[in-house]
Structures are given as structure tokens and as C-alpha cells.
Image (cartoon, rainbow, N blue to C red; front, top):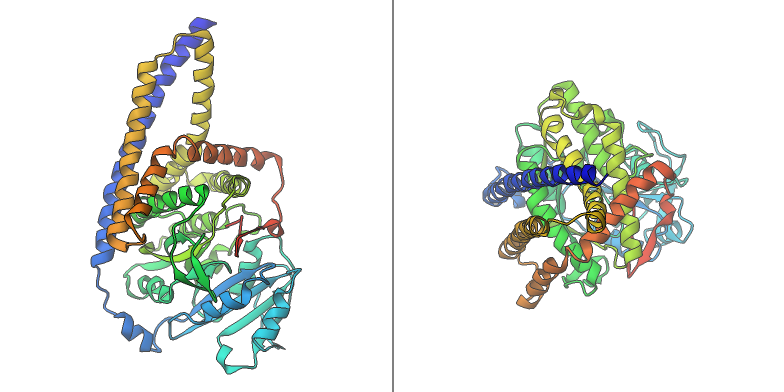
Length: 478
């Protein structure tokens, strides 16, 4: 028995070595691609200047869709912030998803709303819509409120909002998100100037925890004080700059954040809208939209903007963090399972040959391999002599590589966007990156493994299970 285990351990060591070398090599490719994408994004001069767009009525109209469930504490100020976005042709659609607090009452009172006759074309099936409200005050003529029965998910509320929209492009966001004033202008530009048909765009997202917020706008960007938000700040910087920018350059982006995603409404409807049963509706939607375009054999693009355009609150406690990431883990395995026929399928071009396999091998399998590695190491300590040199060299190589990637991400972010107030905040972020493998990464890995387990054993929780954290609403489903 010991001999069999020893042979297995040897083969496992070789497998892990090859796997990690492949992982590192692929991330090097992503790093180079990301650098080129950021450089192009910063140097690119579009034919339509921002000032010209703000003064023109020939731009594409945009519908900003904002689902809301029990948002009475923040809805007035944050909605005013959405209504003040700088763009000549847009509307804001708030979907009251069966709120049990004063959300609808506050909307009616503060925005002078009256129920109106409205032609509702239900292109995507949702729970019953109870009515539409418009303001009698011309100041709020861009506002439309949709009141509906709770659908149990953000997806159902978002679908009702898109069904009610009038413009060909829509932006889906969350009520707790704070957007830069020029967000619409920057996200819609690729739709207007790209030669390929752009079906979605996204941009960087930052953390609003501890930021000074007044009347739905950020007065001062502040560095997170608590440990978990700091770790997530580090993760966001690395993933947005060295992940999604790279995939965007290769036109292989498979994920646009649910907190800030702009979409071609026609393609959205053709794809069937958000899937109400999905645990990760944003990831699953992009996968389905890409599949649709490949099936239609139409050239398309999904673009990502290097600049941070949105601030949102993130979990600040272990319990909230594990709950959120477990849902992300369920969404990952569910989407990969539902669309498994795309795996290494040349019919789906880069999506099937490159992106989908990456998510299977590196996003899905890594937590499982890490757990298996821990189990094997513990068994080896009991039954065999452990090759400590091999293990330590491998761990050190992986740590130094990802530490380099993280440091480069921090430096690029600070050099280009200057999001931090002083050197102390940058040094704190660097220290967090050093201790990340010891604290944050194991908890994150556990959360994803828990999500995989729950996918096969439990039902989807209702959207109403959201928690409150600080002054903003934390959407555990996003």
C-alpha cells in the first residue's frame, strides 16, 4: 500500500509541477497582453471627443437599469446621483423588486411619482409587474420606476427593467454603486466607434468601504480600514488590470461585472436575457451572448475600460465574504456545466479553445487541486518521507511570481490612476500582498469549495437574503 501511495505521490508531484508551470506561463501571456491593452486604451483617441458627445443628440440612447430590494435607507440620495450622470440621452429605470420596507413609498414621495399607463413588452419572462411610475416634476423626467412582485433574484428584476427600457443600449448596476459622472460616455464609446459589433463593455470597479460619501456621490476616496476590504482592494486591482484587460485585448472576455455592465439590448434579448436560475447571472449571460454570436457567425467584441468607473461596498466580515464567494463558486461550476459543450469546441473560436478551458483548468480546478495537495501532504507526513525541498521550491516560485504580478499591478494602478492618497496606503497594500497567501487565499479557496459543494446539495437562496454592511447595501448575489 505504501509503495502504491509513493508512486502516486511521485506522479502527483510531476503533475503539479507541469500544471503550475503552465499556470505561470499563461499568466505571463496575460500580463503582456494586459500591458499592451492598457497602453492602447490610454493612447487611443476616438473620433468622437467627450465634449462633442455631451452636446450631441445623435449619440446612442442608454437605459440605466437599477434593481432595488429594501433599499429605503439609501435610495433617494443614490438615485439622485444616477440621475445626475453626464450624458445627453439616457433614462434611469429603478425596479422595485417587491421591497418590504419603505423603498417604494420614499420613491413616490421624494420624486413626485404617479402611476401611469405603460406599454410593457415582456420579451423576457419575469414575475408579474404591478405598475410603472413617472414623475410629475420635469426635473425627474428621465426617471421610470417599475414596481413588481419579488422574483427571488437580481436577474428577474433586471429583466423587468430591460423589458421596460426604450433605448438600444442599457447599463445594469446596483443601487449601492457609486458611478463616476462620465461613466456612460466612456462605456458607450466602443459601441459607437468599433468596426466590430460591440455587445458588452465593462470597466474597473473599486471599493467604497470607508470612502466619504454624501448624497450618493464620493467626496473623498479613502483606503479601507478593515482587513477583508483591504485584501479585496488588492484582488480587484490585480484582477481588473492583469485579468480582464488582457482578455479584452484578445477579445475573449467571459465576465463583465454585474455591478457595472453595458449591453446591446437586441443581442441581450436574442440570448434570452438574464437567467433567473443562475447563481452568477453576469458570468452566465456573457457566456451565452458569446455563444449566440458564434452560432450566428457574426463578428463581435466585448471591451473593457482600464479606468475605474464604479465604487461598491464589499464584505467586511468573514461570514459575509464566505457567503458571497460561495455563491460565486456555485455560479462558476453551474455556468461551466450548463455550457460544457463549448469546451475545446473550435466552433466557438477563442471562447471555446482558450477562455472556457482557462476557466475549467485554472478557475475551477485550482481550489480542488489545492485541497487535494493539502490532503496528500498530510498523508505523506504520516506514511512517507516528504520531499520538502521540492515542495518549498515550488511554493516559493509560485509565491514570488504572483507577488511580482501583484506589485506590478499596484505600481501601474498608482502610476496611471493615482487612487491612493499617500505612500503609506501603497505600503499597506504591499504588506497585505505578502500575507495574502496565509490568510485571505485559504479562506477564499474554502469559500469556492463550499460553493461547489452547495451547488450539488442546496437550492438557490432568495435575493432577499442580502445583508446590510455599513451605510450601503451589500448585494451578496453580485
